[in-house]
Structure formats: C-alpha cells, structure tokens
Image (cartoon, rainbow, N blue to C red; front, side, top):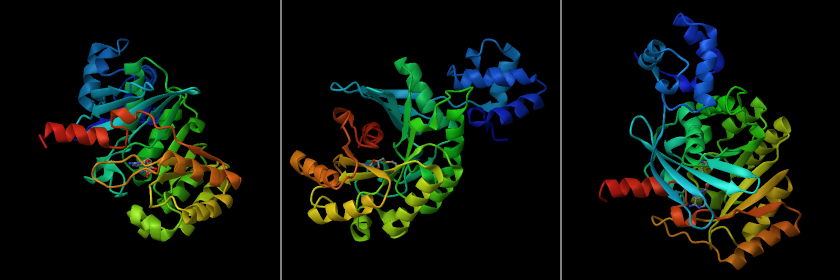
Length: 348
Ligand code: SAH
C-alpha cells in the first residue's frame, strides 16, 4: 500500500486519519503544529507523542523532509541558494533573499519542467515529476530552520510551471495560509506562470489574494512563439483576457514579467507593443535582464538599453521596475545550480 504523505494533509484530513487510528483528536493538532509550525524533521522529534505512536505513524505515513545537499551564499547580497534532495533522490533548488521589507523565498513547483522556454535552464531536461504540496512547503520550512530566520514572502518562481501542477499548488497555498501553520497571508505570495489560460481562469475563480505574475517576455505572438513554445497554444489576446478576468475576480493587479533579451525583444517596436498591452491592464511590469545560460546564445541588453526601455514604459504611465539581480555569482538563473550539480556528479 502506498504511504499517505502526512505533511500534505489538511487539518481535517489529518484529524480523520488520526481518529481512524483510534487516537484522540487533539493528537492531530499536536502533529499539525509539529509539522507546519515547529518544522519537525521527523516523527522522533515530536516528543509530546508517545514512542509507540511515533513508531506507528512512521509505518503508516510518508514524512517528507528535504535534505540540503548544497548551499551557496552570494558574497554581494546575502542571497542563499539551496539545493535540496527529495526522498526519492530527485533534486530541487530554492532561493532565500533578504529585502528591506523582509525575507523572501523562491520555491520550485516541479522537478524539471516541460514548458520549454528557450532561455530557461530548468526545462532543458524536461519534466521529471510534480512536487507534492509537502515538498513545496518544506522548501520554506527547511530554509527557516537552516537560516534561523522568518520567511515573510514566497514566490513560486523557481523550477517548474505551477499551473501545470494545479491541485498540488492549491493545497500548498491553503496549508501555507493555515492559521495553525505559518499562517502566511496570500497577499505575500506570488505565483508566476508562463500562461496556461484555463488554469489562470480557474485560479481567478478561487478568488485568492495572491499576486499572479505572467511571464510575457514578448508583446507579439510571433516573437513570443520564438521564445516560448506555450505561445503556440495560447495567444496574447487570450492571455490578456485571462489577466483581465483575474483582476475582475480578485481585484489583484497583475504583474507582467518581461525578460529583456538583446536584439530579440528590446526594440522600439517591442516597446510600443508592450506599452499598448500594459496600458489596457491594471498591471505592473517587471523587467528582468535575461540571465545568460551557457546552452543558449541569449545576451542581456546593456544597462543603458534596459533603462531606456524602462523609461519608455514610464513615460506612458506604466508602473515598471527592473528586477534587482540577486545572487548572480551563485548560479543565479533558474535551474542552473541543479544542473551544474548533476553534471558534476555524473562526471559530464
Ligand atoms: N514557469 C513559471 C515560473 C518559473 S520561471 C513561469 O514561466 O513564469 C520564473 C521567471 O523567470 C519566469 O518569468 C521565467 O520566464 C524567467 N526566467 C527563466 N529563465 C530565465 C533566464 N535565464 N533569464 C531571465 N529570466 C528567466
């Protein structure tokens, strides 16, 4: 029989399981708190449960706990990048960033990715598997334990496409928000998608208070298709409809992410088209000078060109920021750490 993943159960489901074992309900509360508030790393740490119960739990349930196999710290800004090993030996990476407004963690939602964006290192080897809700949570829990610091913001912007792992994402969000767990407000959470339109609409209907970031990266269908295979499936027109729907249902402003690639999407014409899209939307544009990966020839525009692009948008009344590049010295781009670690251990 496949073991149930205990850290992915809601409080109600956990209570049911515990009652089925012939235990009192309050044991479920103790367990939930050990896992989601105190970040216990195994059942044996749960010292107010009897040894016998701990043994029974260990037999019955899968207890997900990530092991840090590599930690890199940036010499510039204190950004830390963690490579975690999952219970089946797969690897995921997460990033801890310090900002003035608090600590932020960027988590992965899948092992690998099948979206195939051309500039992204996470997708080069395809999708291995979805992450469980517990494995998304545990990236945050493990980082709180390892750094000894509170995490106040979460961005689901690491490896993987969160809306390609929809059910697990929603369960993760609800556990993250649980008052008996980290109790994180979803206003402090950003979910980034390459634009899976039906699931953007489903998410809108959940009426959660999280920020939806759309990886736009090009303002015409033709250019977007060159950078992102998903653009063959959904047009920019459909994406804009989905964004508008998201805003209407949730009242939350959309973020457009736009990775600037020299000569690809940073021309006057690109600026004009992006301006037209952003003007019709309650949105914020986040420009990201592309993080070069060695497998592709994409390069960043120079600083002047990035600022000119930013100013062009601002002149038209569009809210825009250039993403601070954090941790460039530590395999900063998505999927690079996992990739370099695997290649090194395979002797490639
Ligand atoms: N699958 C989701 C989230 C993961 S990627 C998505 O597509 O949004 C998080 C963001 O980083 C996305 O906007 C993605 O397009 C961008 N990104 C990936 N690789 C990059 C690189 N090498 N340089 C700049 N941005 C990159």
